[in-house]
Length: 241
Image 1 (cartoon, helix red, strand yellow):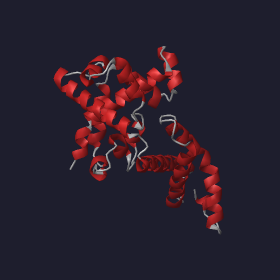
Image 2 (cartoon, one colour):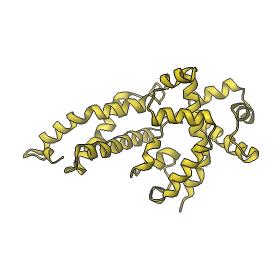
Image 3 (cartoon, rainbow, N blue to C red):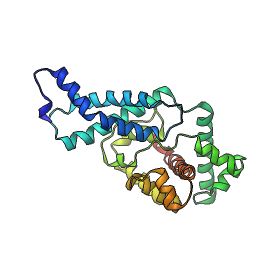
Image 4 (cartoon, rainbow, N blue to C red):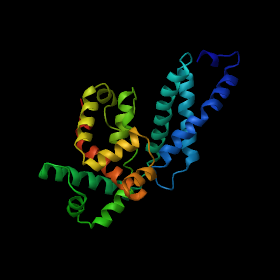
């Protein structure tokens, strides 16, 4: 993108930010759709613009196609880092998420298979409606499976949501990607299908609901349950050397 180099760098930077700001907005909107209602889209866009400017500073001579891929990574990372810094998930919801992950892990060891929703709810001492409501209010969808094929320095940290994780060790290992892919293949078929329709086919939650003849909120619950299963199974990566 050598055309961005100009006699007045500040003017050229402003023009480039204006050119790629729709990319920031698209990424911010996609992330915002997965968050509680109290999260302000404008705050996400502002964080994304910081990521865009970082990308513009670091990729002066790349092609447009290469830059968009690189900038998308930096924009997402900047937005999600800001969300982690704000600790946007309410403490009660975070505690419920941890309880669900623990129950899933325990039941998988006992049963030797992915537990059913009713079994997870029973393990937690909840009825099914309470369990599904808890799923609706956890942050289990902030994960980009497509980032497995990129050099994203924050992917594993976002996935595991553990700032103490050793990023360099996790991300330098192809074993992490293989492990995640293996666990995805062992998810219940419906959860695999929903993840594939969302991340690979890029359907919206509403569109997936129409395909499977269930409500949008039910698709959201299925996705969040799938991500919590994966987080439970991949918890050992927090201790990667």
